[in-house]
Amino acid sequence: MGTFRVMRQDDNGNRFLVAKGLAEAEARRLAAEFEARGHKQMYWVESESADPAP
Image (tube, rainbow, N blue to C red):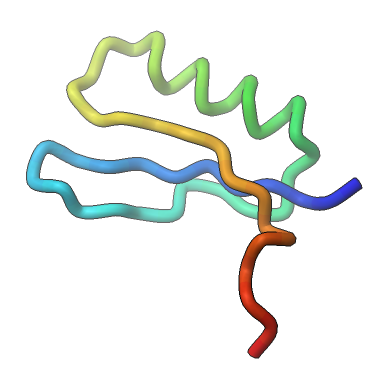
């Protein structure tokens, strides 16, 4: 089990971190909640374990 983050992309293609360190179910719930608000931004969930080690 890893941790997950919620990302957002705005109308101009800029990407932002919304939340991190979440369980997958919580990250997906949060992304769905933001998507349901009807804004033009796109939200998605990423695994944090996919990050390259520093």
